[in-house]
Image (cartoon, rainbow, N blue to C red):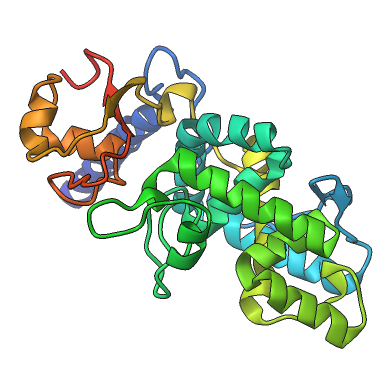
Length: 306
């Protein structure tokens, strides 16, 4: 009897634990998010949409090679969930900066997804020396009027680097004839893409045999466009308040040297770290500015870091 009683007591304890765990799982996370997050850990084959396009140029999905390559990038980016959520969060913060610059320059809005695959919308550094959200090389930056040195590197200025990216893409489109080829040229260079087109006697990106990186490039862009445009379809669940927000700033014009950015920041009610967060192109804790160039330094509006 004692054994049976102990067994019943153990079963009862397990039942209470199960009810407690269920209650925790079923509880809403907060008053604004009563719909429980989807708790589905199954992996599904994806249906590749048959109407995918990039900058108005259709992806030829009926071609079996193109279908497989597109499927690969959709799968890889859908099931890399942590990275995917970060892209949604960062896009909400940085797309509003990028989009109007693309529009002003006549570059299709889809090219904002090129920035996503280049850098994950972060100021990263490539092994080859490309830097910033748009991954611009030093020579390209200088050719297009950006200052690049140990003191100032304007490749880290999102507005200025987006302008340079637009100029490059417009020139590539003019030379190569399509936006898909212009996007490929952003990765492999105008000369490299033009040479491959001539060697292989084709005139379309999807007909080219390319190296691994450039061969996947357009497909990655289109995959990120599709996923970021349809989050629920690909299993991403978030609230508006989960996304990162851009902190409003105003610009302070400086045409002299700044000997101490710590003191400079404090004069605007912020610290050096916050100054650098909003001005990553300032590479040292001082500004040389021997030429008396006019710079615009972003200062966050009052109250956001207090």
